[in-house]
Length: 77
Image (cartoon, rainbow, N blue to C red; front, side, top):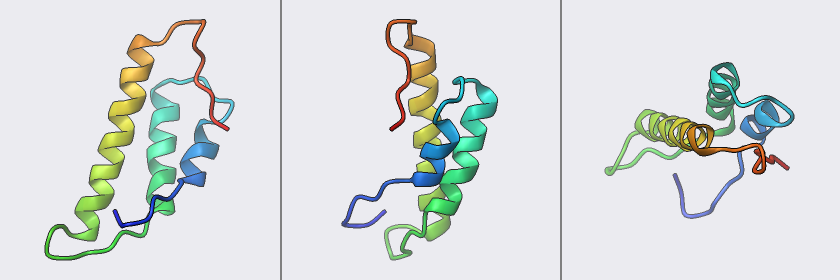
């Protein structure tokens, strides 16, 4: 998105304490959109960067969900 890493507090809050199901993933992705204000430049539009971030979050959470076990709960701090 930019040169400086940024947390997504809305997406984190949407996941905190929630069971990792499809509804929680969609809530986190919706909240992520409010957390982001990406730049637009010759490499990518702001809309593309937002969609990319949403896709990366969805993929990470789905991969975690498919490989998670009871011993490794999702910890959002």
